Image (tube, one colour):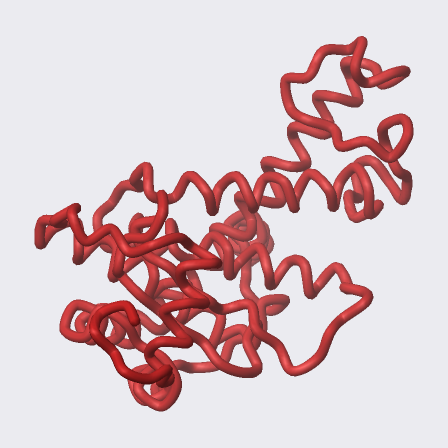
Length: 244
């Protein structure tokens, strides 16, 4: 058997799952201490935010072991039920969870990194679906945009988008950007309210490289729950200041 193991144990099963989901571990790539700390902060941001906003209701697993093209992993989408429908508030929480990694990088280092590419792609795709497929944009209304239920991509040619006019395309761009930016601001708020937990989780990741089960629960025990819908956005704060 691999690694000289004579039997299949829990570690073997978890490694097999990780290989299927994220690819084999990159043992040949040696990360610098700065890279390891950045990845640890990024993945800790995911864990702390999802725990704080109630996105996760069962197991989590964090790792800073590079696999495939991923520098780290946060398996944080496990739930206690198979949802067949998602409310708008569910999707908004999901966006906060997706963007919490890059938000943690901005809070810690004052800038993002290329490691956030997959997160940003996923967030943009979901936000665009909320605008064009789910009728969750106040500016565009409760309509589905695009012929044949096809996905509307930013920058696509007008010929590919049927009867959609340039003004509507601009509105789709604006609304997608607004939804993503609001989710990022909410993620930053949640993480700043739980910053000590982010650092504690990141330090534990540096020491152990992978956290799951009781070990992860222990470092996340101090995370404070926050209702995403009650987080004030910057423009709301400005309006309140102007009114007072």
